[in-house]
Length: 240
Length: 240
Image 1 (cartoon, chains in turn orange, red):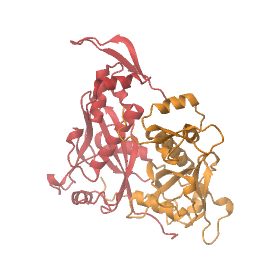
Image 2 (cartoon, chains in turn purple, green):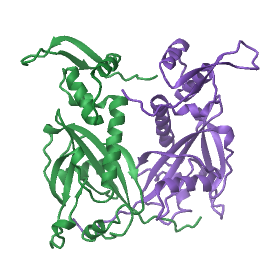
Image 3 (tube, one colour):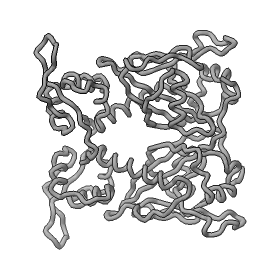
Image 4 (tube, each protein chain N blue to C red):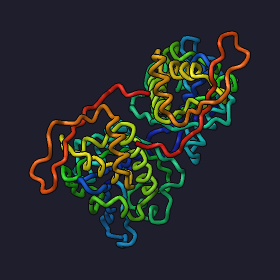
């Protein structure tokens, strides 16, 4: 074991922030900013996830919150770590290197990134670009363009993590109104899973869930026949 | 954005290898080796998870497999990444620093570690210490001593990940014989979840699982009344 062992690796965080507005699932993206000398053309700048290097003495969770805030002005969002991406070539695309040469001391150096995600009610969060983001905006999940670095893969894996938690931990319920109809609930599942679900099967499965509690109350102020309302009560002791 | 931005952070991998022998759940630990000059006392050496720094141009998955092999001589094990630990002080305990000063160019430097886990049939894997491991052995999960760095926390979170996958993805079945009894299955769950399960409830829940298929066959060569045998058939399309 050689005593001079160390690693020449940079470490970053990236945030996959999903937003739901009752109808669509979107993801928050930034547009890379031109360096101060304006040396990059519009074509050389890419869309990307909000992300940046970890400060030397900062925890990973703190880093994710700071970076999201610095780039998009959003804060107070619970971010969950889901995977660390470590392909040695993940920042070595041509455009990636052009951009990094303007912002990094060691643009050629490998970067390992710890990825976080969250799911929020989109209308509660209006992102505003700052720091090295030229723009920050919600993009519909099926319209995500080619992104910088390996960020398309990070979005895909973030979406897989979200779907997993939707079905095993029922995390989507926070996005519904406190009292919701089964149609609203089904739409949430359909949008996040990106597929149509059979209405009868869906309702049968939901009825098996002790946490979805039928209320003695119906929708008000709708033109169609008012549907029954339900509420969600989290049960912390789920097991086989 | 300052152009000289970089990080002075080392990156490592750690492996939490769980073993099941039909009765007990154990975890593979190494004992830290004395440096060549023998300068550390027995009391200064600690038990730890197999782990080491990532090589500069190596993927994280490859690194985990290499490190596990170098320290314990085990290979061919599917390791799954489950969490990255990034507390800035995680390698700065007194004993940790004493040991690192003998093996690292920058012992004081922060280390972020990407943690992997796996679950294997214990009797198929006989670890042998090599590299800087003084010893490598299976330790019963409830008898894990105080470990180096934050490795107790990593074991705990690895165990949580294992339990999660046991109940949501049924990963434990690979550890049973191809044809198994419900008692064998219940014991597997009880050992990994570390609690007694009610026999009737357990059987009721297992019967709901399409993947557990009853066979027209009973145990042979047992002294007690032979129990019915079952087999497991994985279903890739599980959803709500």
